[in-house]
Length: 346
Ligand code: HEM
Ligand SMILES: *[C@@H]1O[C@H](CO)[C@@H](O)[C@H](O)[C@H]1NC(C)=O
Ligand SMILES: *[C@@H]1O[C@H](CO)[C@@H](O)[C@H](O)[C@H]1NC(C)=O
Ligand SMILES: *[C@@H]1O[C@H](CO)[C@@H](O)[C@H](O)[C@H]1NC(C)=O
Ligand SMILES: *[C@@H]1O[C@H](CO)[C@@H](O)[C@H](O)[C@H]1NC(C)=O
Ligand SMILES: CC(=O)N[C@H]1CO[C@H](CO)[C@@H](O)[C@@H]1O
Image (cartoon, rainbow, N blue to C red; front, side, top):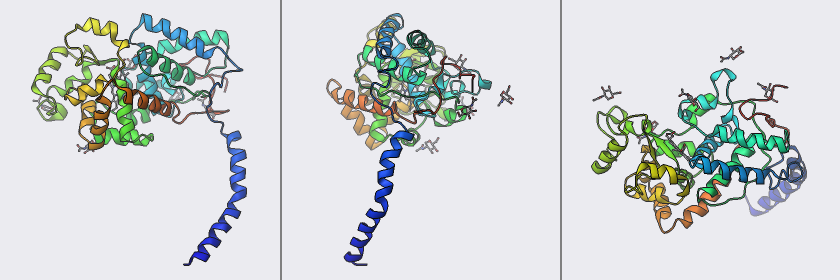
């Protein structure tokens, strides 16, 4: 219509919505508390110190612990939010950790060890979901990765989401459209998807996830055509059987023996993952697919430069975002006594 009318409408709507806005501002934070820094300052002052010192000991004993926890946290946060639902067992065998993509999840025992120590200091106060997020953060630092601040105040879920884990955890043979679709469901754009996949800078991969690429890929009767002949031979040598394990940094340090990788694997959180993708040597099909889309390939190129400073900065930020997906706060959920079982007094 005309500008006079437009002005009237906007003044009018301002007056109408003002009380609603004031109410929203005062009411929302009370009914849905958000995560915050130092949530445990009064209730369990030592929690972050306990997690850090316990993680230092754990990593000395198991160099791959940071990788195991990072993958565990990714699976937890992706399915039903960062609510420790991935840690649950029992419940009729239909929990997230039994879902097909979850089969090789590890690191549950480290969370239990940390939880035990925290329960001794402050019983019933610190959630398993906060412990998983804090322990992962410290593990990444101990593996040579970036530090990022973590908010706390998560509560644990009393449910686990088997079907969702089967449908919405990305698969190692998934193409780039499928991977991007699943990450966008959780609010991550193309670049952030590439950032988070940098988690594959550390850890190990079972040959069962690689061997399907080496012959009769997706029923074609041929190996995955995106693998170069040289690399195909290398992978066949490293993965003669499904029950072998190879290290994520296989391609960056090919002159060293596998045992040396195993020993030092925790200490290599750099950007070599992206450098291997630039050379066509991603271990999983879904890794190499990051080069098959213009936007994701551009991000891989950015991250592969220099000493990985850009990657480290953006990884820290993306991990903060991952840590806050779908959290339960306030009186929602519970603080579990044992991380693998819901409290029984409902
Ligand atoms: C397209 C998405 C992804 C797929 C298909 C995928 C798939 C896999 C597979 C198949 C393994 C090997 C598991 C085994 O052999 O036990 C693995 C390992 C790993 N993944 Fe992913 N992953 C994805 C994204 C991520 C993200 C976003 C992170 C973290 C931010 C992550 C962190 C890890 C780590 C650290 C390991 C090594 C675990 C260990 O050493 O025990 N992954 N991933
Ligand atoms: C789970 O266990 C309960 C109690 O044992 C049983 O009633 C229910 O049918 C089970 N559900 C499934 C899906 O197996
Ligand atoms: C989980 O919590 C909800 C809400 O507090 C409750 O209604 C439900 O019965 C609980 N489920 C179990 C299995 O304890
Ligand atoms: C990617 O995978 C999805 C799901 O499996 C499939 O529907 C789609 O056709 C695939 N796209 C390409 C380009 O292969
Ligand atoms: C490849 O896999 C498809 C589907 O799983 C199967 O029908 C076919 O016989 C296999 N071909 C070879 C050469 O193994
Ligand atoms: C079917 C299957 O392989 N399940 C495995 C899921 O993960 C747990 C924990 O690592 C294993 O104990 C199960 O065997």
